[in-house]
Image 1 (cartoon, rainbow, N blue to C red):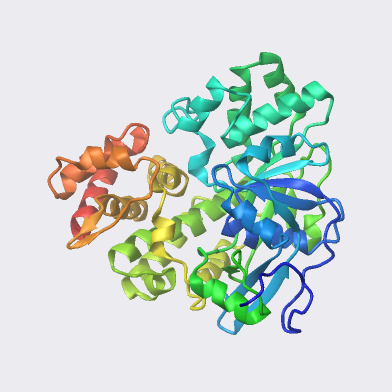
Image 2: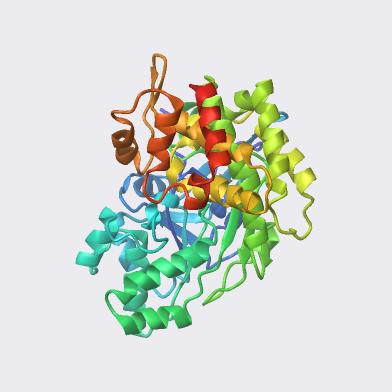
Length: 466
């Protein structure tokens, strides 16, 4: 039986070993999924940061936390491209925390950063008001019983309140999710949540706690049996936490922290005063085009992004969309949008990465606003054409029907029940489908839903797809 990876001893010489392991944890990370393991933990592993180890846990399940404990926090990061696969054992994670232990860990004075990769849908953000969604099950439960929080927002507010009461300096909440102004969003939600319990606490959070915005980028598919088998082949150890990724990575961070931070810039991160230009570029070019590839690729029967981008018609649409998206950007220091677009096509082309279109297609109602609706509204407001964005929405609408011919699929969307209810009695024709989905409360902005030309472009594209 292959031993579980729990030590860097006896690794093959071809495997890069983890750096000097931190002596204690300074970061608690919420959301121990593949992206965290390929990004934040990887950057941190490259530093000799004795007091910046990471402990991590999920909001709902203890499974991954227990896996980290079984493996002494160690796991294999596989980096794949056309030249082959390299393996590195990451050692920046010191262990896992079960959901029941997260609050106590966040109150530990040693924890100075609480970072998050929990996906857009887990923030409890109202799609209609942009504020706290008090109807979200976890938010509602935490408002009713704030002493036993289960949402990220509830946990952060409660932990900050307990630290304040105990005279402990606040930690820095650090969102690493694909939300525009992710730090601003998290600040708004946490302070709104706190205000419903304690106005003084909300004021203290607003005055004393920084919420830096970040932009993160690294294509990281979900781990598979192949991922884990390749990690075992490389290291000689079974690894339930192995993750695979591309060589490219990027992390842009606003440099506002309450109690210090690791020198992530030594590992290639960029500290800036304002992350907004970088974030807009990534959301509209990489993420927007990813959605195009995901929906059109999935509907065309392409399992992976690499196959979708190899489809001539989809590739041409992706290239055109990148060029159009670039026209909606503010200047980005040190970045040529045309070169950035070329690099993105090359990254999508990476034949060694098995990034499923279905993975990217999930949670569409949480992703479309920043990837499609915001840039489309800007283009139309200045009299420009936004048909490419109409095409992405049409592809999502076709995907949202959940079937094509004999194929049937789950939507994996936070509003799946509402989508299915809206389409339940609708004929399978473009206009009634579009009308039903345009009418979903809080989804398509009025400026787009009421724009006759853009709406007709969506319906025409949807008719072709159907």
